[in-house]
Image 1: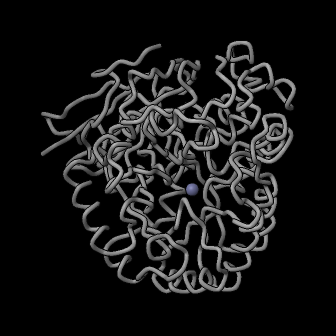
Image 2 (image 1 turned 90 degrees about the vertical axis):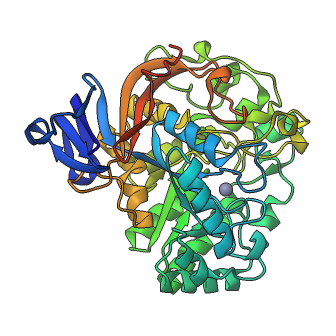
Image 3 (image 1 turned 45 degrees about the horizontal axis):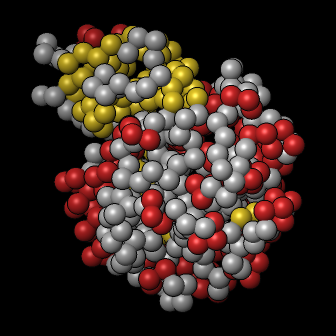
Length: 464
Ligand SMILES: [Zn+2]
């Protein structure tokens, strides 16, 4: 029998509204007891882990991760991506289907699930494509994908432009009880933009795309969710108008939900101009309440740094505040990284030619804590809920809780730990992250999957 007893921690389980000092016992990969019963029921040979002063919560789930396998293993593999996940405190990741080939058939789903079972450090849940080859023209075999084990469908990286096709996808998805996740983007408005359209795109001479390019499709998805009854989830929201649309639709009971990524609620398009001195000119200074983190303490970087190029684009300070407000009032249900690794040689080109995206598995929790918990916008319980019970409910996973009998996935974290993200320390194969050298506050100290420690700071201390 395999058992682990975590002692002395503050246990937070948002699904059960539990927040108290307690011991936690995991036996044979399942949560066995919480509180006084934990030590009493522990087998004689139990492995003990002292977590005094730390927070113990259900294993975090990252709903939006690009593992790049199969086909793009120079950027990331299932092994390296899940190792980065564990280091960031995630015990489950949901991988996107824009691999090469795309995950649009049962065979590719089976390949990833087999490889993840052998080489994955944490749980991997697979999403399937909405359309064949993510080409937006013909539906993928949604029933076959469901039977093969996908937890949702999405054409992430792309967006189905044909509304009739999207409607049919929603109808099939509803039949198979799968959520439809969407990268909301109207191509006729986005065109070949490389950043947010506004003051900075003009000042920098870069082609911009307006927030309306996202909001248009969020509105479309609300109408289709109402029409079909399918559950539609809007991925990586970046625009203030999207939050407002979602807020109104949810009030009417439309089955729609949304997620936000730390880069969108931490940075603005001013970052592409290259220096923290611009923050003050673009609304509020970043991290106003996060202790010693002041604009002057932020590192600077060159203008046109491609590590600030993402899709959706970094938007204005107004948009950033709206995303934070949407997270605070519950309009945006889920936090995730959109971990999008790219090789150095791909990113080290002119801004126009670089691919979109940054890595995020190892910085997501810290940035979320800084922007939401340390600024008092969200309680620790409500923040953890957006990484645990909320994604578990959307995908109908038996995860995201510490109820007795649940899977023994646990994250241990220190919300107040100050540390610095070091290029040499990442477990990802790729280095495209804008937050190297920043003083971050809060991080995971251990990740436990099925009752086994898959990563612990004790084995691998991090720079403070
Ligand atoms: Zn996307």
